[in-house]
Image (cartoon, rainbow, N blue to C red; front, top):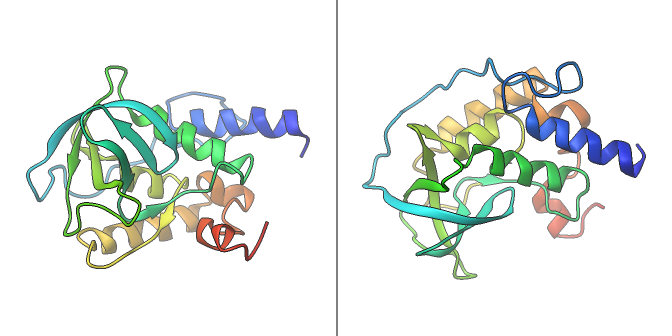
Length: 183
C-alpha cells in the first residue's frame, strides 16, 4: 500500500465509525448494536477532553493523561493503523469534549496516567473501540470489571472482520510491537 493510499484508507476506516462515511471503501459500523450496560458501575466523574493522544489515551482538563482501561490500540509508529485508531477514538468524543470517566480498582498506572473507562451518551467508548475493530483486549488485573464484555466484543469484531481486523491490523499486536517482537 502506498503512503498516500494508506493515509486515505486510514481516514476512511476511522470515519467508518460514523454513518455513511466513505461508503464502499471501508467496513461500515453504523449498524453496530451497542450490547451491554448503559451505566457505569462506579460513580463517574465529568472530564473535558482537551486532546486525543493516541487510540487509547487522551488528555483531560482536570485529570491530565487518561489511559483507557482494558484495551490496547496500535501505536502511532504502526502506520497506518496507529493513526486510524487515534482517529477512531477522536470520532467518538463529542464536539464539546465532555465525557464521563469511571474508575476500576487501580486509579493510576506506573506512568502516572489515570486509568479509566470512558462513557459518552450511555455507551462505553472502550467497548466501542474493541467491538468496531480498532482496539484489542489488554487486561492488567485487578482492573477486570468489564473483561468478559470486552472479550466477547473482540471475538465478534475479529469474526466479522471489523475495522483493523479486515486488513491484518493486529497481525503485530500493539503489545508485541512495544516489546520489539515485530515491526
